[in-house]
Image (cartoon, rainbow, N blue to C red):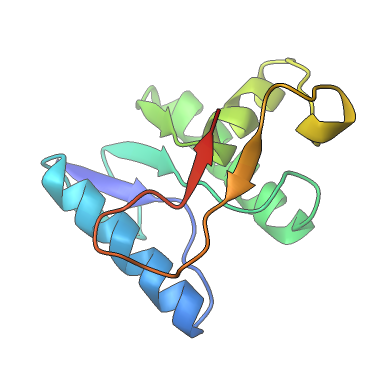
Amino acid sequence: MIAQLSWLYPETEYGINTNLQYYKWARRMGFNPSYDEGDILILLGGADIGTKPERDKYELGLIEKYIEAGKPIFGICRGMQLLGLRYGCTFVSHIPDVSKTLVHSAQDGGWKGDSSFHKIK
């Protein structure tokens, strides 16, 4: 099954590593990953909604395309938020503004194999 990964990160060290990690993850899940149309859309994690308007517009367009085609969509972090946005959900864009007990923070230390990129407590 071909899985379209929703966003190709720019050609920076961070972008190349991010693309590679998502590509490897999709392979481990049994998909043949691609950045072209596939049997399933995987909406990748990344920047907060509203901070990259061109990405938001592009991925929301992909969502519509896959819905119209009756194809499945899987959202990871930001991707799940985009699906929620598409279906009229509201969400907190900056958690520290409303909660001192829920912590969402980036990990330091760079890339370490298959480690996660951030944690939520």
